[in-house]
Amino acid sequence: MSLRLVLASPAVDDLTRPRVLLDRRTQVQIVDVRDPREHAEAAIPDAQRLPLTHIMNGGGALDSQRPVVVVCKSGADSELAALMLQVYGFEASSLPGGMEAWRREGLPVGAWSDPAGTD
Image (spheres, rainbow, N blue to C red):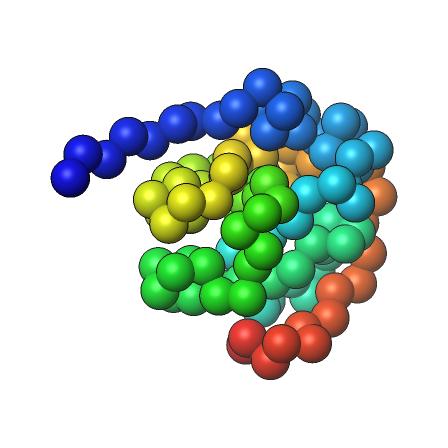
């Protein structure tokens, strides 16, 4: 069995720019892999928190038919998470620069909730 990783399709790749992601956030699943303390500070509107351990176990309750953009603090953990999701068949990409890039752009942040109890 051969494994081929696709870094991102053009549609997902376009979503790796913070302002584009903000405008099109309802078209994708935004997954935030930061820890609960970081979430308490700020979260991207409509993002869902999903710990890396859940992603390593197959992606949790994500919809495999919708693109995923993964976010972390600076982009390193989200790159790993996006690659893992690709292995599981998701169309996934990382937000370069993570929440640091989001904040540099002056984009809105909000409170987050954890309806799935993933803390």
